[in-house]
Length: 102
Image 1 (cartoon, rainbow, N blue to C red):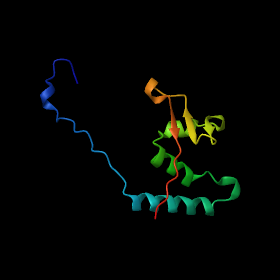
Image 2: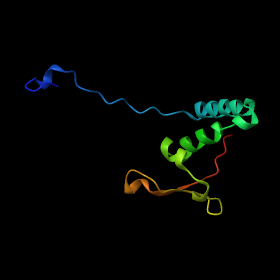
Image 3: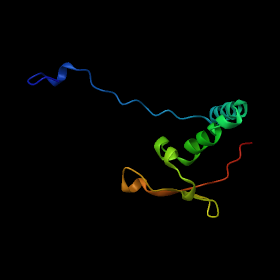
């Protein structure tokens, strides 16, 4: 906006509404990711299904999932430790829960 220009000449910004996945949509995404993983060469497998599941089910941000290191995974306590976050509230432990669809 230029100095002296009136603000009301612009259309108001509208915040987009959140989009939620239905369970069957998530399952279809996970199945497709699993098929891509299975078709990939052994040295090119990147765990698409696991990454999608962690993002959808555990609430990780993409950057948090990318920064996740093995020492931060506590299998005995079923927890992921998120240590590098933008805010103090972002530093947390994420519980791994068993989820079955059926």
